[in-house]
Image 1 (cartoon, helix red, strand yellow):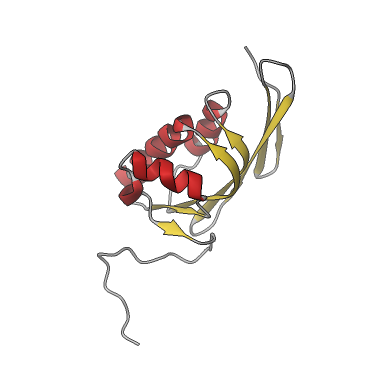
Image 2: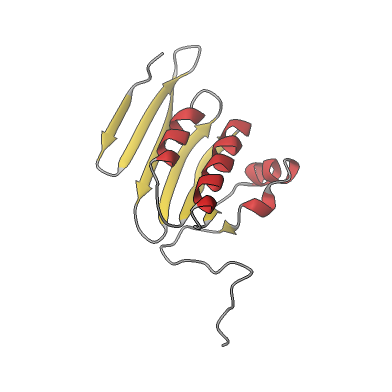
Length: 139
């Protein structure tokens, strides 16, 4: 089955249809920078997680922050795509953070034992956050 998809410059908007025919929009915006910020909007589940994964696959270099402040629902399918993105990002020596994790998504990370794999930020920034094992400037 082919899903409708519209590309506009650096933004990818994917519109999915549930089994009842109602549109369930998912918006994905990728903003290149240092780090690259991938913003997700909507409900992400098994019906549309592949489209999110495809957007993740387009990021091929540098640190990445996934902005989840506007994700109203994230299933294990989203977690699977995040784990795959983390594997790709860290295998090339870069870092993946998540921003704006809801209480429900934080619980999913906790129950799956993956919280430690996804450093949290309150909001995305284009300034790299030091990892816990990097020296910090005295001040």
